[in-house]
Length: 475
Image (cartoon, rainbow, N blue to C red; front, side, top):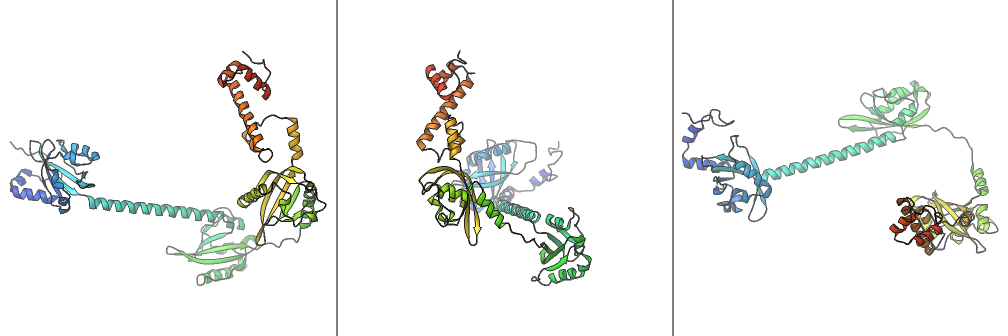
């Protein structure tokens, strides 16, 4: 009876019995030891009974100490399931599996094994190949791939930024093939200047944008741009009666292609000679809100009649040249904060502060300001609105506590901290009572219980906050 398997394993000898008989024992052992960097003899219990270590580096790291130890005990925890799978007697062809061994001196070493069954008693030989060099190579390959990916992402981001600049730029720009003189790209500003729709200039001759009588000179200018980078802009007339323009051309290369960057600047129409300075000055002088213009040192340069009246001075000459802090804000507090906000954000809106008059009176005001360049320095413009009368009317008409945190913060600069804290306490108390009444469907007894106060105390607070009479909704 023939004991050979009817179908030999793929990539195996067709007659393994004959090959085995032709090998002497010492030749077979030498062959197994030379195939890999380490060879293990494993018994049926998975214990390493012998070991061959052709790799001198592994020999120096104490690999022979694995003898008489279970194979799964000398590998890392995550590799132990692989050892169990390789030791299982399976009819499927053996395949290489990589595990990580724990070294006695510390660290790990990756080894790729192929387990071959040697007898019916379940013993096997594991041929291993040390993979640290391959792992280092894989790590370098992974790092290279990640570096290329990062460079590719940066390139895409840069391309997206330049594409955005190209599309959003207000200056008309064309990209032209230097060899064929055909337009490759055009930004929206160029299409608007020429009165064309998107895509109308694609692959069109560049000469079509120029009036026929100027085309020869324009083509000659394009040719000269290929030999010099210092050409002065050339004046042309645009096709279709789109007006006059100045065109600058610069040669650049992209890959192996020579391209021309064509910049078009439309000739500005001569503006009508008119000046509204006198009208603007008259409007500022007559406006009902106070207006002040100061230099960078907050010295008043211009003040209108409303500011003169609000400051209580005799004429504008008394305020021009004087520091704005003489009248505006609490000394050393408000004005410094306002200027800091303007310098950071270029503008402030509706800041509550005070204005001190010549006679010692103080007025509640709202101030808005803006910074503007002035030669090599900066000037500040302020509009000032008197809100003292409005605030007084609100206070006398209704002394209800603020209804929101926003209303509380608006009190800063108008009330002392002690008064603001008292208002905050009233606000919190009122909000809690309203929430309790809503939670209990306006049941006063239940609301008092969940608030932890007596019913009489709750009635007193309801009356103080104006939240209803003393009997409505009682159960």
